[in-house]
Image 1 (cartoon, rainbow, N blue to C red):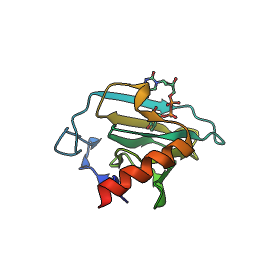
Image 2: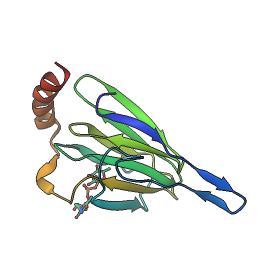
Image 3: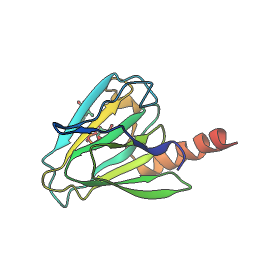
Length: 140
Ligand code: T46
């Protein structure tokens, strides 16, 4: 899907356990300026409901499992995240909703920029308006 993809990371597995290294501009396509993590989300809670104008992010479920709905005006997909060695890249202008958090889920997010409330589009109709222009320009 446009501006989003699943990335498989190298899992270094030996008799001591597992180690997954992630290097900016090597394993993921942007420099990391911020990280945050989300946990303790109840089963019936849906988070997200927004898109970002410029931000690039990688979502990694480092414990438990979650599902992510990603949408544009043209496409929609539901991705299951349940392994430490996979990350969902989400670029600009993708609507996202995170749901079905398992009780033990921990979602780690790597972000290309500092927190900026003005980069969020939280109203779905405003998103559709902006996204129509964005995808017309980007896809042509
Ligand atoms: C995203 C998904 C995957 C901050 O103060 N600093 C931060 O760096 C972040 C990420 C959030 N906040 C504040 C803003 C809100 O008052 O934390 C509160 C909860 O944030 P929000 O409702 O945006 O959380 P989610 O889970 O809906 O979305 C988050 C990220 O905000 C968003 O960028 O793509 O996770």
